[in-house]
Length: 133
View 1 (cartoon, one colour):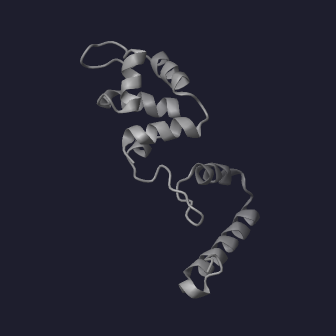
View 2 (view 1 turned 90 degrees about the vertical axis):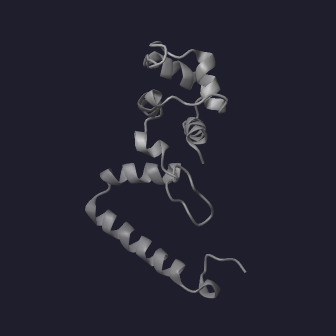
């Protein structure tokens, strides 16, 4: 997944339109080094469609609008979800943020349950209860 696909994915994940994203980005008034001006709506749509090369100076502004760290736009793991792999999905990121509010006894209980699931998943393929025959 390239950076433009990640941006589009994160826009959709936030249940916002590209138009809303463009307006929020322009409201931050990012200046392009080449022109010294805020990119036009049409230019930003060009970036989002992949028809134009995304300018690096826009990355911090894009990350701010999307509510992510700049580095998240460059990782290979913005979204990867299947029936058994939820690594870095929207739901997992939400859960990680909510763990702050979990009392310690409940956190320890959750950890124990997750370790039990891990053991089940590490069983040989034929013995794994999560794999359908």
